[in-house]
Amino acid sequence: MNHTSRRLLAAPMALALMAGFASADTIRVGVIAPFSGPFAIWGQQFQQAIEVYQEQHGPMAGEHTIEFLYRDTGGTNPDVARALAQELLIREGVDYIGGLVFTPNALAVAELLTQSETPGVIFNAATSMITQQSDYFVRTGFTLWQVTVPMAEWALAQGITTAVTTVTDYGPGLDAENAFREAFTAGGGTVLDSIRMPIQTTDFAPFMQRVRDQSPEAVFGFLPAGPPTYAFTRAYNENGLREAGITFLGTGETDETTLEALGEAAIGLNTAYHYSAAHDSDMNREFTTMLAQLHPGSVANLASVGAYDGAALIYHMVAAAGGDGPAAIQAALGHAWESPRGPVSIDPETRHITQNVYIREVARDENGRLINREIDTIESVPDLGLTR
Picture: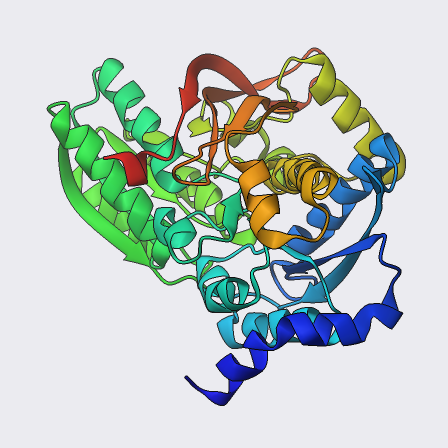
């Protein structure tokens, strides 16, 4: 056991010494996410969605006031994420950790959560195996297996039999590649090539040319939401894949934050995902209306709903267990509620969210705005990466 591990095991004593920072009735939640750099929009949307939740529900959960503290990783920085988690746990005395956009960052804090018995609510990081790395992880986002298997099965149902996969070369991308290949080939399809792209690239022309050269019926893509998805989707059109009859299949590549900028080229693109800002429910309308009121110009997307439901789950755990980490995790297992995305629950075995997956098609709404219109629903999908 190294010095850092010994220091963290002393966290309960450290938290007691930190009692002066907040009253016994205050529960502190540290949110770790990028608030600067190319992925800064993730942190911004996490914070905005949490503020929406607190505006709607107030600052109290049971007898406790909830206080959120925000820390910036700047991007995919596991060493920074671990250092921030240590600071939040030991110096700030937080009772919960939330956020975590990228898989490497989530993995970097797993050991710390286990040692300090602190619940960690993952708003996004989407590799299936993350929740297996600590019994204190719970996820309110999604996994790539969860949304990719329905995409592959839908493609087969449309008569598509050949495809090329193009994914960002890190944990979630590899999950997406494996999920699509397994489901697509199991249904009789053929994956002609599997292309892995660097996480920092925004020049996708060479990869699109490689796809065209193999003349598949479809290209499946996965990239982290943000600037890369915008560039990738534009590259699909600008490099003539649509004209060549190669169908676009994706997950979050038509993200709401960049959808309007894609313009007419986005119309007709199909994705499978757990949320659309155009989801037709009263709760979603209340959520998106409040978001627009508090943060004019902000657009709801996967980051927003992951954080909103992360806040909802944290409120539930705090009301049930206060700052008692083990009891809070027990309270989360099997918990079900209504989300802006639809009905959701926490699987008591995987500690991952079970939710609907929607087949979406980009279209214009009655006001002429581009939306991800839901055209089909696969109900109550678990994390297929841990159940197969």
